[in-house]
Length: 248
Image (cartoon, rainbow, N blue to C red):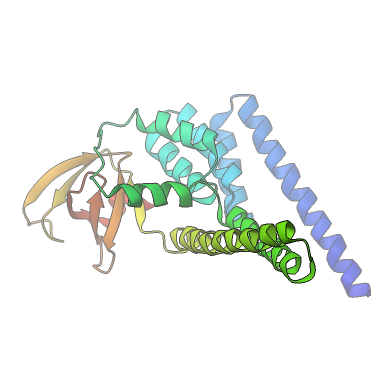
């Protein structure tokens, strides 16, 4: 019992310290001390782990400092953790509008686009909560069908149970998809001012084209030492030096 109480007290102290640290960083941002605020937010991330709100605030700091690639990087990280946040999405669009390369998305089947939008509409936690709630309502519907004699109520119960079962299925798949995106991050942002994309992982290989800082890429191959094969949103692909990009 004593150890449990000590653990609770320790947790409260940690939470209080964390809140104070973030509030101090927020205060620096309000005072337009963006460099100091950015350092404070970076320390919070290293000490306490990832958090959408901290990444978002850090992105704002870099945007104010006109460090657009780092702003894009941190907005992308925030959006990955909180895909339904419209403020993050709006700021990301604004930051990307200031990058040099204006990509055109490769065409895809409409249902792929639709499913991607559905999955990205909520976070893993939100999808999980929805799945649990739908499962509970499904059980309620089954109980209504089994133990209520009124025909109308039984119909509501059985049809509602099928709808909730479908929602449980969709929510679990969406939560799994979101979690895979977070755990297996295979996207990155170009951080170098300009990078020549190569046809193979060698400085002597053919130059394909040039990309600029702030561009988002998908990592296709990360096994070559010092090089990454990447694909761009418009479909082109090639090899770039590892240090030219930073993973989201």
